[in-house]
Image (cartoon, rainbow, N blue to C red):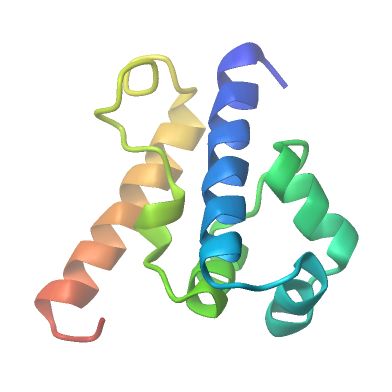
Length: 107
């Protein structure tokens, strides 16, 4: 994992943890709600493990936030031009899907 990816994953983890604390959930309870292990939640929150998009959506649902709320924005300083293409594509794809669902009234 390169430094840019590590920073990106750490920011996702920070956002997951903040949303979990806001939702007043323990790591164990969040794990049960999402079908993950407590260890996976710990790894995600520390930035050691990046959740694939479908798990990010599960986490967001369990936390009562939008998936995009857990992702650093592409326009945020230090992220837009530095992300590897595959990460930028994933973030853009997920953000686009959330925008489509919002327009269609599915959110």
